[in-house]
Length: 409
Image 1 (cartoon, rainbow, N blue to C red):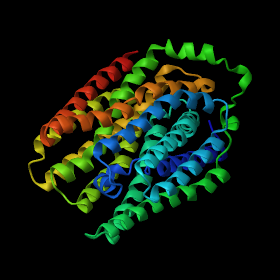
Image 2 (image 1 turned 90 degrees about the horizontal axis):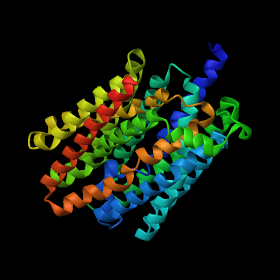
Image 3 (image 1 turned 180 degrees about the vertical axis):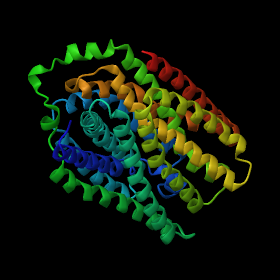
Image 4 (image 1 turned 90 degrees about the vertical axis):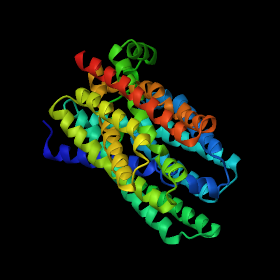
């Protein structure tokens, strides 16, 4: 049982970790709220923007395993500070509206700063802080808290964008630049908080190099059947979540809503993240997080598959479906890492396990951007989106089967 002082220390460190995770990723995924505006201002095609995200996904896939190895050997505090600083500096470059070649370099840099140095370090830190019986709520609070930070920032971003926005291209550029600056400064403000309040990983995990054998540990990880079931749960759940990144383009290009209206809808969806993820985390710990994950994946798949069939109705119904999908997919995302507790992984190799699972589970970052743009090029917009959302819903059902199988192990 933790003393009040130790418990307070754990909660402070957890809160800072959540804050860091909440501010570091929105710059990478500005397309979620401003996809059409980005295409216009940077004068690029959807296929080019999709290529940038595929490059990002490739770098993530290549760095997740080294990221886990790094998190077992280097202080998480140092890794998180490096990540935040590098991401913000690249954000300043991005705000200058550089050439397409420069954008590719920026996305490569973001892949390293959020994949190699940040990803496994922050997940390992949370897994260790949570202890044995609170994995569901801690990971739910991580994703929900991160979502709350992102929703607050996105609300400011859309407000700033709408304030400066009018019909001229010059104001459109200034509006998006202002949004980017806001995100960059948010990252910079978190860096001193990490420096002051976050302990080094060695103090928390008691990890030393002498008790680590990378080859032996890696073999044990890949021979663990539950690791593979956990991986299937996450890769399927992540694809359900990835579908929500396309809502901005779907609502604006296909349904014809304005940029501010679409931004407001997608921001409202972001507010479902803290509600969905945190609720799923606590309910999962009270019952069974793996069983709840399977149920949520089934519900999210059904809701996602219904979107293209209901989009011909009024705006209120569309908003309702988008919010329901957001609530369910964020619930899935909030607890799918809690399945790691079913894999019996020691703290000293938890970073390596997280890195391996992430390397496989986040492969959709590579192929889903191309898959979507390919469907929209081959088919008309309406059938293209229908195939896209329906196929991802089927994958979500496969993930639910994996979750139920893992539950029975």
